[in-house]
Amino acid sequence: MTGQINDRVVYEGETYSLVGEDGEGLFDPADHGLEVRPLSTACWRGFIAEYTVVGDRLLLTEVELGLEDPDTEVFGVRPRGRGHGNPPHTGLEIPVDFTGGLLIGRDFVRDLYVHMGFQAAWKYERVHELTFENGRLVGSVDRSEEAARERAAPPPERPAFDARGFALEWINQTFSRRYR
Image (cartoon, rainbow, N blue to C red; front, side, top):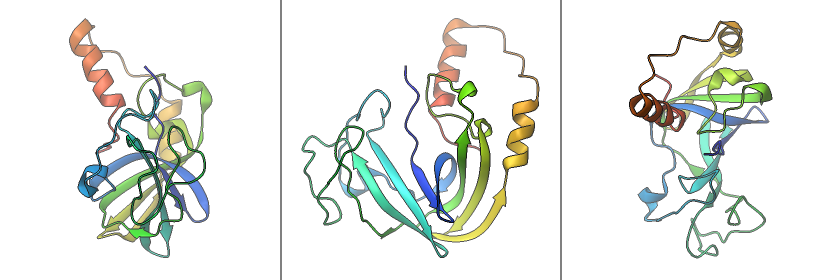
């Protein structure tokens, strides 16, 4: 398996990886009648989104989609440039009506990379939790110290090895970005 490509969040002028989510309303191709397929083994879900916090609003500003016809117009925009599989749709400013929390991380600690799923928030040097209500930023908390404590803590004991059950649980966990 392969580590998965994270969505991105541009916050306070810097680009972060979206490493955790707890809420509803982020971009989903199916909500727009788009049927996607994997872009690569590093993007099984078939899309990569970029969100930008502008003022207090969350906007979808770029999306790369694993569409059968890579030249498909989305949100009135044709794709252009190079992506991870298909060219991305750039220059978007689509309001995102997300309510909940997003964990964003920057400065990934490469020694902690696991070749499976999405990387956990604690594997980043800088971590912020952003809270939104109906697409408006209502809170931001720096979680970097908590991530550092988790990196410094001894690893948890592994549960008794049950080849099928343990492996499936771990795989499902690595492909989920839920953090609460």
